Image 1 (cartoon, rainbow, N blue to C red):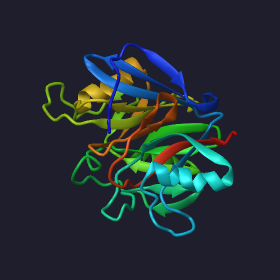
Image 2 (cartoon, helix red, strand yellow):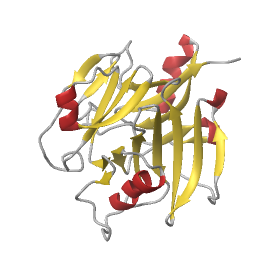
Image 3 (cartoon, rainbow, N blue to C red):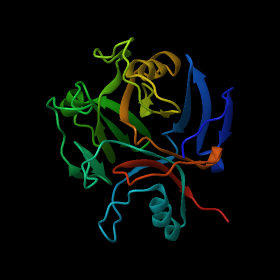
Length: 246
């Protein structure tokens, strides 16, 4: 069940300080923002159980996967659009292996509202990269997930976002710093427009690049603030993994 507190500014660190999640109000809407230091934390993507090859689908299943390895899940969020069988739409790379190819053409729905982009995780950094630039530069991502639309491109909002739009949904996405050292994962705690959501990244978090992950199904796992969103099965998920402690 989704919820948020009466939002003054509260910061509570998750276990071992791996992720800092906070509830904030910005321009009349409430958001939960989780900040990750990509230079140190175990940031990665999850899609399928390696033993069964079935979609993991939930944060609980990620926990079950990690526990026998002596690892724990410090943070997680849905991370990209997917087909009915939960296969990723567009580029998906896990542990350096390409599972699904890049889609660079326009198309229906939010994914096809170009420009879209790719969230790329490499050793010591994480970056949101616009899709055509991603194809030109060919970064060697350990993990990558494509989604769309871009929210912020080189410091500018997506050109199709309208300030007076009446299309409002609960939305989630990610923005990254110029040097790739920090990533901000955000979920709105009430329905917002694309313009509102993109403005949060551009004007409040000051991220030069930001990418939309999804709406409606948006969910967050943040034990540091005792938030454990549930619901129907998901496709790609992003998480921070740490060593379990007694």
